[in-house]
Amino acid sequence: MERRIRVLIAKPGLNSHDRGAKVVARALRDAGMEVIYTGLRQTPEQIVE
Image 1 (cartoon, helix red, strand yellow):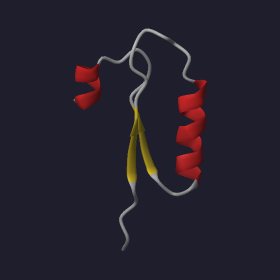
Image 2: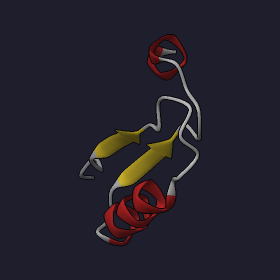
Image 3: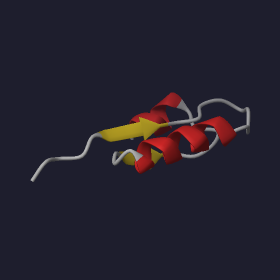
Image 4: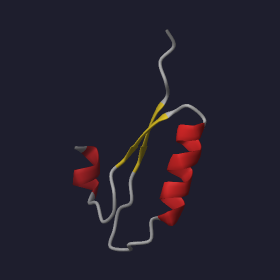
């Protein structure tokens, strides 16, 4: 069984525009990848967790 590629998408900073990140996440999922989206307004420390 082949392992899927796992991709982390994060949106750091105070800007709350995440449409682009969601579009990329959907495209990667549709291509068969596992996508982890951490959400908006993340600090680098939160992303690393």
